Image (cartoon, rainbow, N blue to C red; front, side, top):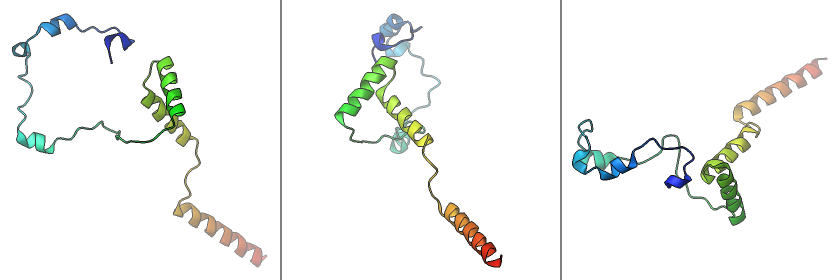
Length: 115
């Protein structure tokens, strides 16, 4: 994201940072990264997965337009739309629910026979 796209005003002194050399940066609190680190390192966002999906051009264009108007990322809006959709869906029919319903119906049928 470029500086002009950001809604918040940065408190960073960009000119001072640009003028710094590598020797000016204090890295004393960073442990050395050896071959073992890089052999096991993985790049990921906690709680998120990178996927590839195909979305209709019109749908994607609409999400991008709405995201731009809202000052948000279009992927964030897609994620929010999916969460909202899932929040309003009925719970999936599980084996436990089926067993409970069958037991209740059998008990009901037994009561009717006994009466």
